[in-house]
Image (cartoon, rainbow, N blue to C red; front, side, top):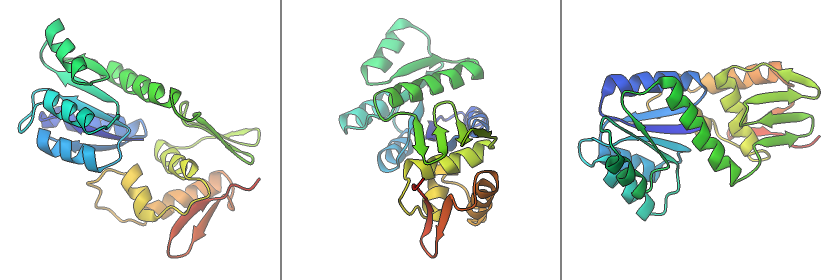
Length: 221
């Protein structure tokens, strides 16, 4: 799952990004409304956390522009304001939920998970079965046969991305884009490290390397 945080309070934005990354999400952060709108319209995000008081464009206008352009990504709005009028205005522009600062990080994570569950509820099943592999993307649990595999948050995110495109060749760059944030400048071979870890914890022949192209999750039982 890839999230976008649009928040001009840099300390808050980076704190949220650090926490959500630890939860297993890939998180991008921008601090300006115009940049947030541009990124949300050009990149595939599963949820946007959007502050209202932003430079460039405020959150209301960003949200309204996304909805007018046909983007249905869930939007959680944040604001230091408090009052029924502000909440109504945020929801009227197309936001899915609303959180007033200061807020509990635990509450924010719960809201994020609820919005993602709600989106899954109207889409595909969160449980994916491929032969003896079963992956529950909502509960973030994995079984191989009758045994549950213990994966780290990042290992699960790599596997989830391959599962959602099972049978397709997924490039290393594509995995980096969806599992790590857009500012990642480390060694792209980090993907190989996580694929190797998944092979050790699951089964060596489960993820096939397609030389020069990427990786494919095998779907045959």
